[in-house]
Image (cartoon, rainbow, N blue to C red):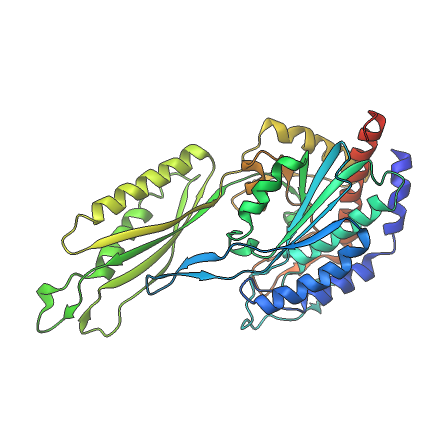
Length: 405
């Protein structure tokens, strides 16, 4: 192990350059639906990753099928996936993945980075997840600059749509899961530097309720109020919040127009979180029953769309050896690792559901993600990069010592 630690010395003076690169990337808006901005960031990332070598391709994503507030379905184009494969002939292979999009749209007031008085980098995507992109890059540079380069193969996926559930890249992620032995994803570490051991699954559902419009004064009785029907439906969904492990969040309602017209259209959107597949199946059954119930009301019709974009990610037996390897590497580096579960979901859920054991919080430390207070702790960049590098080097050494390619 001492020999492996020597390869980490190249990282000692990398913090300022890493910080500058992260700042440059974060100062380019790459909100998921800002396609020109996502493309600009992708171009910068291609320049950064090309020197690593390997087969680099830009992969088209499927369009995102969206039900709008008017109840109609449209297709939204999404950015391209950056996909790199190197040393595919090696007997051991590792998947490395993180996204380049953020939750901050082009019209958001939060657009540029700044250093805070406390020495933190505040900016859009600094922790989630452009900081993780650069940690991943430097870890691969460390591996490729070592004598162990080529002992393991690696695959990189940088997708452009994780912040909306990876609707365009999800099928590609799942299709690549079987090509590697384990996955390393670079979402930000949990507060305090913890790593995620399990994640809840998440689903987004849209209910489109149609009724019958009528003049509220002259012909009120002829109308069928879509907003009232939707409100009652959503209230029944909210009443399903009886188990702490399963949560139903009614997140958005739209509908209606002039108040002297009985509204004939209302759209409601619900997010659901579950711990296991049994709960996921229960949610789907309950929603189907509710839709059937409300479709039997006079003059009311209900359509449901959406589903679980990220299945639950329980702590499976195939993940425990990977946890052990990471804990051992962290101990060698004097890094304390606290394994925790979380209600959040990410692309690690998709890889896990496709059979790829993975740890998905190997990015830098920070906090307040998805808000204008999002921050990155600069001092975490080198330790987290050393950890990711040592994980790769240790695995390459194991393959080498076992007589592998």
